[in-house]
Image 1: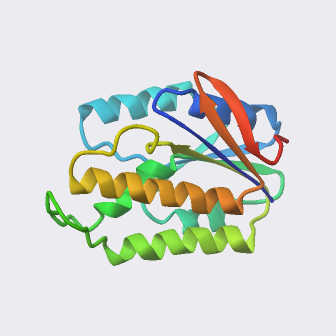
Image 2 (image 1 turned 90 degrees about the vertical axis):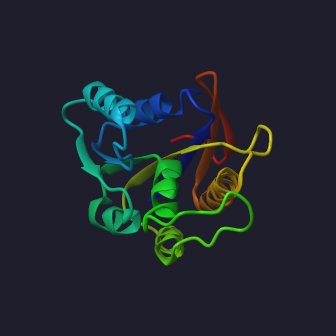
Length: 186
């Protein structure tokens, strides 16, 4: 298994870079989409992403059970591209429909902790094939206003650190330019 984390800010070019790596691998590609179309704008973004992906790529849409899908889809001779971890994280934070307070500590749903642990355990165990994870770096600006935004930024930072510790390669993308922080690109 070769696992790579590709992260950066919004519109940094991280997804395009990950897609280029998947295309250049000359292997079967499975694209795992974690987004959910909660409104018209997001539905339009999802439609655009679908149109831009090569027709030969198979897409699996999964909002929550990422570890389960990775177990099913990772195989020798295959690249699995997950786009993106931070949308998946957001889906988990709000998976039970609870209302969070504007201030104070948030109690995240049990499924959040279970799914996060399942992903990290799976990475520890290893999987066949190649995996490309796309994630947002949200912690390089000011501290967000409000408990929900702060909690999301904290959890995204923790997730990126945990995944980066377990992958072979970590790449920061800014202005479309990759900077390898760990390992080397295959």
